[in-house]
Structure formats: C-alpha cells, structure tokens
Image 1 (cartoon, one colour):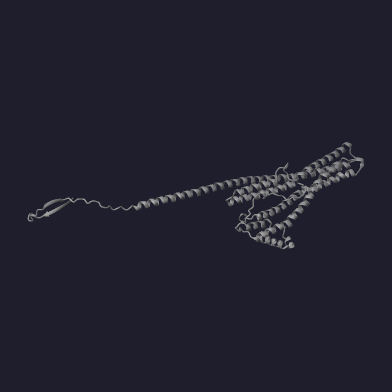
Image 2 (cartoon, one colour):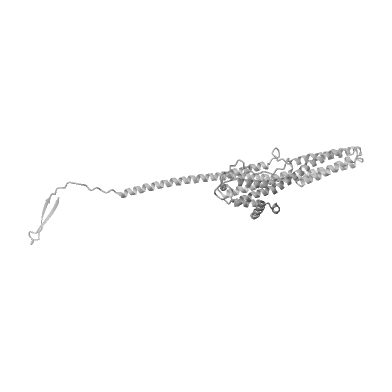
Length: 419
C-alpha cells in the first residue's frame, strides 16, 4: 500500500496546513520466472586448499617419519657394530699384555737355565778332574764320592738340557715378541677403523678372524699347543686368516678407485721379485738355522751323557783315557750350551721364520687384492701402493723402478736394492 500525502493551501493567510491521506491498494504481480543465485565459490576454494594442505602435510610427515625411522635404525646398527669392535679391541689389548709378560718370563727362563746348566756342567767337570788326580792319593770312600758326585751332576745337566732343548726358551721368547707386535698392529687397525667411522659387520668379522689366526699362530700354552721347535722342513710363519671362504666378484667395477693396468702390472712384478729374492733367501737362511739348531740340541745332551758315563770309569786300571773323556765332554757340552742358548740360535731360527712369513703375507695380500674384479671393492690403488712401498722399506718411485727393472729382466741392477 502506498500512502500519498496531499498538501493543500486553502487558507494561505492563516498559514494553516491541511493534510489529506489516501490509501491506494496495488495488487501483487505473479512470479513468472526466478533469477538463480550464483554459487559461492570462495568457500569451496578454501576447502580445497585446506584439504590439499592437509594431504601434503600428512605425506610429508609420513616421509619424515620413514626417514627418521631409517636413520634411527642405521644409528642403532652402527652403535652395535662399534660396541662389537670395542669388545674385540678389549680382547686384543688383553692379549698384548699377556704375550708381553710371557715373553719376559720365558726370556728369564733362558737366562736362568743357561747359567744353571753351565754351572752344573763345569762343577761336574771340575769334580771329575779332582777325582782323576786323587785316584792314588785319596781314600776309596773319598774317591768314590767324587766320582759319584761328578756322574750325578753330569746326569742332572743331561736331563736339564733335554728339557731346555725341547722347549727352546729363546725361540719361545721370540714367538711371544712377534705375537705382541702383531697384536699391537691389529689393535691400531681397529682403533683406526673406529676413528674413521661408519664401520660394518665385515670389519668386525675380519677383526675376529685375525685374532683367531694369531692365537693359532702363536699359542700361549706349552703343553699340547706348543709349536714344533725342530720341524722336518722349514715353513714360514702364517698369522693371517685364509681368504678361501671369501667370495670374489666376477664383474669388473666401473669405478677406477686409483687402479690402472700399469699399477696392476707393477704389483705383479713386486710379487715376482719377492718370490725370486726375499722369500728364497729367508727360506735358505731358515733351513741353515734349523740344521744348526738341531745339531746343537743333539750334541749338548749327548756330550753330558758321555761325560756322566765316563766319570764312573775314572781310576779303573789306572787308565788316563777314563779321566780324559769326562773332562773333554763336559767342557765341550758347556761351550755348546753357551753357543746354542747364549747365542739364541732358536731365536734366530724364529726370526727367519717370521721374516719369510712376512714376505708371504705381502705376496698373499697383493694376490688377494688383484683377484678382486670389482675395483670399487678393492682398497684404493694409490693407498695400496704406498702401503706396499712402506712395508718393503722404500719410496714409491723406488718401488716402481724395481718393478720396471724386474719386468725388463735386469736382475743384476735391481738385486742390489733388495734387503
């Protein structure tokens, strides 16, 4: 309804205002069509963006959780491996101490037994000489006492010589010295592996194999596990684990890793030089030391035994030969004992055995490295060459020159540069 106001001015003079109100009713028109409302796009876009952000955040959280889980697992695995290496390191440190103490103990054995046997032998020789001189002047009881004393002392010296020659304390001492040095070397290798970081289970297995190989090469007990002191044939020492059970890669690696054909040829020539010169020389010297050691080990007890038997015949039928035999045999036995154990012939034999084993170790290391076809799994070539040069006591340039002269067959020129 629309309200209309009509103003009239009937009486302008009186300035009165009359208002007329009228009401007009207009009927409502019917709706023929309706205008559709546009959709509200802004809330829909916001919902889509929020859902997308939620999905992205969820995926990112899942990826982060997987990465964190993997890193945590790797960290735990690495910690366990380091703990295992420390356990092996503790065992190695204990063995270093044990072998060092036993080396000192067996060196004392050698000194004490050497002095004791020489004292007994020389005392028995002196009594034999006194008995032969007093055969006609002393009473029968005094003469018999001198003879028996001399025979008993010679017999005691024979028994002690058999024992000392069986165990050979100077050789035992050298064995323990070598074991101490090699265990210290292994100790430093494990410490270096831990210091570099990121060790693997292969490092733990390799360290344990080396410990067991050293225990077998240099046993601590004497009874049952002692090394043969007089073998039938000279054999170099072996203190490293065998590589027979380790699988080798059949495919060549793509990485160079410091290796080249020239370096491989150089290492092969170094192996040939070691075979032709160093290993052959130490095998020859070891065989000579073994023969001398065997001869001295037999001669000492044999002479004291002859002296013990000869001293019982002193004064019989006035023969001077009966007095001469124990005197000469006792004197020679003391001299041989001094040369064998004072000169430490057993230690010299063990030194040659260890030196020959060292060159066999270098040869085995080079061959096992070159047999690995995957260059990425090998030790870095330049580092390996430097290690070989240091172990052979020469510079890298000298090592290369030595290998080149060996390849050309110039034996006389490079032979003077060997040990």
